[in-house]
Image 1 (cartoon, one colour):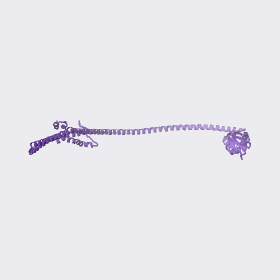
Image 2 (cartoon, one colour):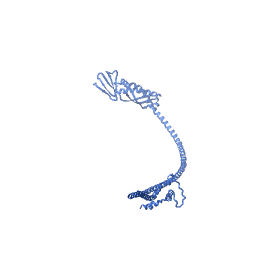
Image 3 (cartoon, rainbow, N blue to C red):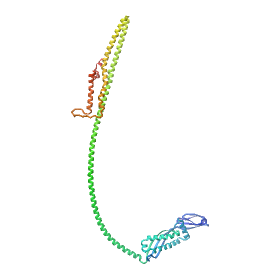
Length: 436
């Protein structure tokens, strides 16, 4: 044997014995390095073995001879070291045929023993039970030899006395009798069940019709209730819509009134601004020129007075009469003062119209604000109309009354202060002619 590795396939096992091994080494499906001359290598097949076990004319429990044929599948389990060691002890060096014969004799003996403890009927009717008994008994013996029984099946059972045939005829007659009886009972039961089925069908139909009628009635009642509820909700919705529409219209009217009030307020503000503008125009066109004219006249009077004084002094010096000169100077001074006062009186007379107008115009915005104060402080105005033809309504009535009050103010001012605002603003006043 050459040096090197010894290998084997998965269907066989290596048995290595000799040097370095106190007991054989079993290697199923692998490789091992072997020392030739001092180590020995043997192979053991792990293939599955199919065995046919035939037991002819074996008397059963009741003395009826039968022939039984069974088929068994055997193999040596290489993964179990104990079973592999037992198989090596029993079959190492033997061929697969010799192993099969030894196993067949063992299985046949167990098969004969099981047949003697069972009746023909038990073997024939319950083959599974027979196979199980043979398998369990044979496995306990073969496992000690390292062989595992993969399966056992009862292949055939027969007899030479016609027992099984007679048993089959009796059973066949019994089956036929039972079949006729069963057919008659089936027909009877079929008729009964058919009648019961028809009755149940009719009962179910009537019950279904009743349920349909009840459902239809419930549907109609619920539909009527739903329709009533829908109509009620629709009426409530319509009423709520009308109410909301009325509220919306009322709000629109109130907003329109507020807009009109705001418009009238803006008009009043515009009028106040116009009054301020006219006041400034009056201040620029009347009062300022009047003050300038008054200042000019005063300066002229002062110059004339100074001139007269100087002339008087010069004349007094010229005549060298101190007393007369002083008297003359006093007279001249008095005359100049008188003329100055006269011119100043004329200036103040001309300025009086403008001053009065200035005071009146400054007071008019305050009067307008006082007149509009109640209207500006009102949050809500309720208007009642008698419906007369041509009568004003709403904000027009209120603003009309305010404008009537403002129209009366110039006449009241004229009657109380003697100042004609329209005439003075028109430029026809006496002060204007005097300035020209």
